[in-house]
Length: 89
Image (cartoon, rainbow, N blue to C red):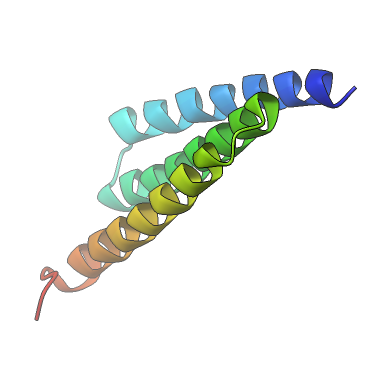
């Protein structure tokens, strides 16, 4: 039963990745693109974790944690750029 739910979750998160990539590509504004990138990061993390559940591998959970840290730092950097024009002061 958990495997079926995990496969459904993989399909849903995959659709979310595609939709976020579309918004990242066609975003009418820079702010929309930053939000799409942040949401894309969250969806990719969910894909990695769900795949880790299916595979039973703890290495994928560590990869998801690393990806989350990189995604957080990049989102903060892009937001600072949008608000101030500078990343490092």
